[in-house]
Amino acid sequence: MSCPSTGLEEDVLTHIGNVASSVPVENFTIHGGLSRILKTRKELVTNRTVDWALAEYMAFGSLLKEGIHVRLSGQDVERDTFSHRHHVLHDQNVDKRTCIPMNHLWPNQAPYTVCNSSLSEYGVLGFELGFAMASPNALVLWEAQFGDFNNMAQCIIDQFICPGQAKW
Image 1 (cartoon, helix red, strand yellow):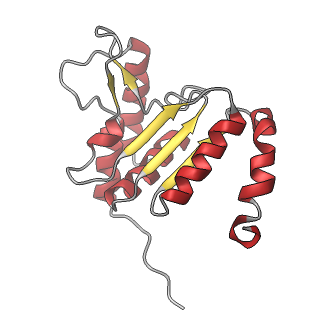
Image 2: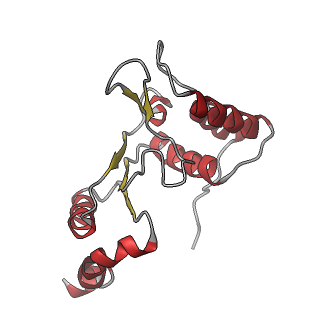
C-alpha cells in the first residue's frame, strides 16, 4: 500500500497564515481588540510557529485549496468560545456586514461555511449528519461548545454516527 503525500509547501502555509492575519475586504473596520489578535497571528506566521487557532486555519485552508468544502457549525464557532478562532469578522461601522477571510484564499477554492447554531444540539447535529451524508466530499464539523453540550446530542451519536453504515 502507498499513501499519498499530505504535506504542504511552506509558501502555501504562509499564504494561508497571512490571510488569517488580515482583513481581505476594503473599508472594513474591525474591533480594536481583534486587531491585536490578528497582529499576534501575523507574528506567528513571520516566526514560522503556530498555535491551535492558526493550525486549524491552515488545515481548513489546505482543504479549501483542494476543492473540499469545509462546513463548521456549533455554538459560537464564528469567534470560538475562548475567542481564539475569529473566522467571521464583523464590521464595526456597518451593521450586519461580515467578512470570512478563509473565503478569500484562492480564486477557485471551495467554500468555507461557518455558522453559529442554536442551543438545540440534537437538532443541529442531526442536520449536520444529514448534510454530511448528502455531501460526501465535504468536511462537515459540529463543535460542542463544552462537553456537557454534547449530552443532548448523545442519541444522534449512539443511533446514527457510531454504528455508521453497518447499522443502516
